[in-house]
Length: 230
Image (cartoon, rainbow, N blue to C red; front, side, top):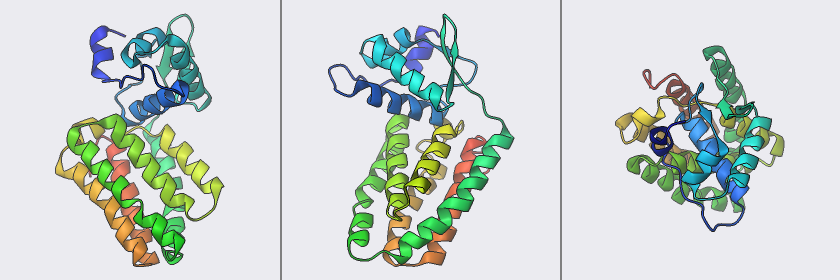
């Protein structure tokens, strides 16, 4: 990995922070999902550590966590290589998300009153954070906020296995077209759908919620393919 390639990742600095392993893993996961870290490129822990402003140890530990998730593979004496997914695998992931998320989010909408409604309303600022990150071109923050939004929303159904599976699917995704779509009308369409989910849930419209989430996943799948059909 060259100095220019390292600079292009725009790694956030974590010097002096606590829980470095988790923070670095989250940032690397976001870079993988966004497609900024590409298959075929070998990334070394020491080089990444320079970008993060930390020692190589938490970066190496974080990369090993990602190995366990199937996101990267070890290249002996060199570092870690991003695993590659083909179109069939991406389609299979999108299909599974379609089977899980629309009906579950519909059930959240049905239950959206009292404390559930309060929790849904509390997601509105996070939806705005996603939009703000997209407008700034901040891919890492965008992916992290987007993941938190969907995970917290799904968690309101009360089934941790659903949350764990969706997190796994999202982590293994690759949005190679996301970089080019940042700040565009296409990206802002994705962003607007987050706030619309909040509104639809508060209206307790299960059918509309299921349709909206299905539409959203379809848009995301288009991003996986490079954004050409979004």
